[in-house]
Length: 307
Image (cartoon, rainbow, N blue to C red):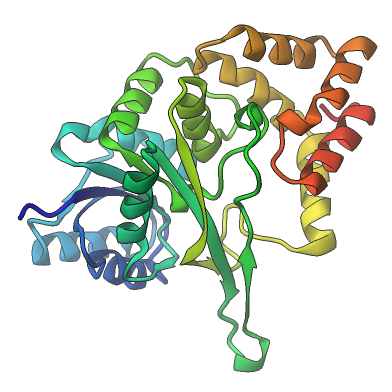
């Protein structure tokens, strides 16, 4: 029997401290045939040497994508460079992995099972954030709940979950690859998970959000984004919304959407920002976010002209 083939895209940069633990967890996935594609974005530590060693020891399961001396400058850019470089037709599914996490052995098998059961093209899940502090008494972990109820236009305002939880079918991955091949220059620091989710949902592909948590999402000082809780989470969201990044990212999505009438109406309202537009966005905010708390936060941001 042919085993399900999953391409795992791993973006690395200065990840020597943690990447080998993650690599072990990727190769120890059960019930699927994993092939790791890794692209380093110009690390200055031992990461490239570690990757070469793993490629030599696992030649049939590990491919290094040459960055050709080009650094994208972000994990998001690195992931899109990886996606552009692979042959999606060689695999049944494509997954995305961060360099410093740890996956449970059944992470991919569960994702594939849910995709098949639901007849879906994209998958995301909750995850376990944890801090492995030097002092055991200071170490702690918590669940990041990312599922929520479905919202028909949520992809205009948020991703499905952390990108490291994503698994796409071959069809969805090829579609995203083709769309991104013609997309213009990114907005500042693009969110690959948000963009991939928007590409799929805009084209009517079914997405399954799993409340299970199969990833240990390591928190440390080097996280590009990381996970926050309580007041710290709210403060971080407010900082993002006060900056132009969030609004700019929403409007940049025009380049990868099918631009249906409903999508255009919402994005035009965001772009104009008139009182009537903001009132419309406030009224329809339940279509844009998946939980009551996030709907309330979005409404507050619109009232305060943060969007």
